[in-house]
Length: 271
Image (cartoon, rainbow, N blue to C red):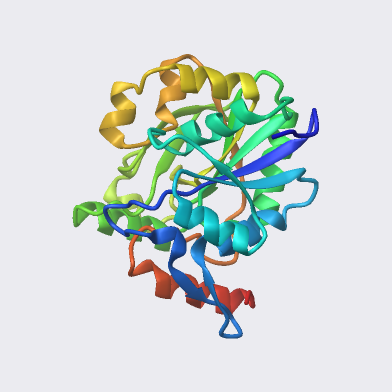
């Protein structure tokens, strides 16, 4: 594989086996005009809409996903089956490239609703922060989103990941719990200081190689959040604050999420 030196590449990690949703990348989702497309194609189309990107690569270890992706025109990289997460799969793609890109963007394969403008903002922010090795977006929680996160937490479900950061917009911690703690008296306010993490990452090649060379950290294993390994190895993660988009950024984690994403596609007019 070759790439343009100094360019930007989007990698879409996709795996076939999922405990909650087996064969998830190949699940068919109906668009605004009734067209059925597999989840991986919808995510690829969303990623391909980002301006200024040199290439978009689907990274998988499964021939079924590769065949479908190549069938709708995607470039595919076959990555090792022992990749633990999307960041390691992105690192595997980086190792295949003839020249380093300026940035590698990790766009999760189950996130077709991620706005292209948010990824553009992410790229702009990391380009403006030469001391940062990794950048990821977050949006302020609305009261409704915060209430949903707390309800999921109380019911023992994972509804999303939250992040806390310092005044320099450097991440302090990510968690599947709602952080920081919000006293009940403040829950009716505009969700003070609670920010929803959006699972897209911009990596500089050096930071991504450091990540792949390190063992998983205890906190990463405990929370099930790949980005916590960066803190363990001393790589700072910047947070790109973005405005909440016009629709909920639902990821396709469970079969029940399909209907919600289809409603969002209809609202956005995406077929």
